[in-house]
Image (tube, rainbow, N blue to C red; front, side, top):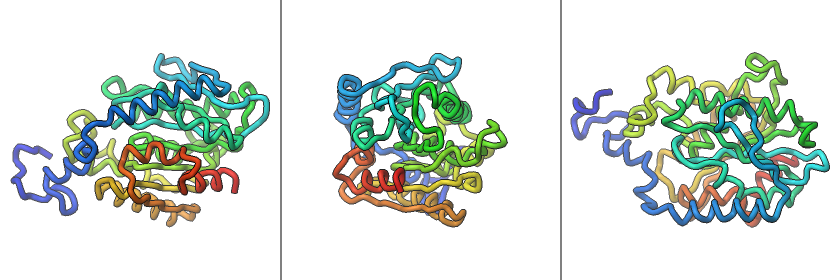
Length: 294
């Protein structure tokens, strides 16, 4: 859509004008300075590497960005939780992604923090493809790292929640000749899953999505391939679109027959939610553990 020809009060998506839609996908309107959050995630990752067994910089494919850090006791087979960071598909790395490891490792769960290319060095299609390669690698190398390949779980925050959802709905049998149920569960936190409104927003200045790419990378359209369970969480201090999108994805999973739970969280903004899933005292963490150990 050519924004130059849109009248100021014209509705461009649902009941949103262009300015309103742009605002819905700009979390920094609500939290102007996120530097403190990023610092806490960075510090938490450094502490996790100091305090936990950690194998760093494991290459899961040929590209230099395709590496991961694996936290936890690799002397016994444990479930594996794979974390995908946020950053609006264009920022952050695994250097800010290990802060969640301590809470899960304490519960006997190995934790992998993934690195992958980001925009402008990769398209969303390419990013999703890279992370799918990471899961295939982890499945095939489970004996090497001594975790249970039949208990691979995903968690993602923000754009990482969108990515995790896309990984969950992968047709593993067709694309990788792996069991259809490679992913046992998904924890998707504060994601924007339907890329069509984002394509119509100011974000598309850098996402550069066309309608086909937006459809292809919207997990709601592909839920038939997912055989696991899902928790879809968001903060009640976020924009309305994040609640609407979370509810829509949860409903899509539910209609597919998946065990699926929606978890709106009071008094939490978009960036708070990045820590909520790994807070041992939070309901979301308790739900995550119950999903991994049903």
